[in-house]
Length: 276
Image 1 (cartoon, rainbow, N blue to C red):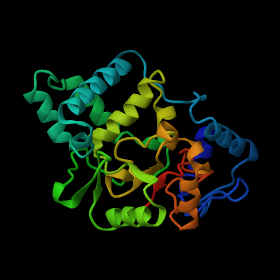
Image 2: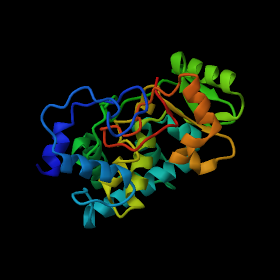
Image 3: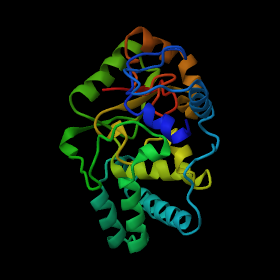
């Protein structure tokens, strides 16, 4: 069985609600056909080394890599213009409009627009990412009326369950826990995903093991990330799982994770990601 056949065989498996070991696998509801042990070991090896290039990764070269870099550069100019917090909830159409209106940004050219459109509509299963796609429209918008800006975080949350859940976490765990990432529109997810790929020589598969491709992030519909004060960038690493904050999240029943340990979705373990 080759890698593509193996990945197809685990496609129907969705993320579960807890943490588990290699023997049981998080979220394994069914496997549509037999998976050979060597292929399972290959998958586990890839995920254990999620930040390392792997055979079969989709890597952009030449003109496509240049388009990635130019599109990312323009998106970053938009982000600097409107501010990081506002950019998180900026929709794609307004992103393009800002490019047209500000000479310091410049209009997205035809090739860049084609690249972004193709990237958004590309089937991420080809990367080895098997999460669902909750945002299926490139031009999906986020109503500001539905959002609450969380003080001193630079992030927004949706009113209702997401915001109430965050307030409950803060009440039960104290001020040591804080919001590290809230609502993300399509443009914001583009920046995160493309920046990760650019930093790794255009490797889109590697990027997808750490960051959902545009459209596939549940940050667009309610999920959010939390961290422990003082931990910095390590809040987005496995080190967070060892913190007192993460232990308390587990004790209080908040670790019904979108991407549990040893999941079969092609995504690294994210103990900081709160599922709503």
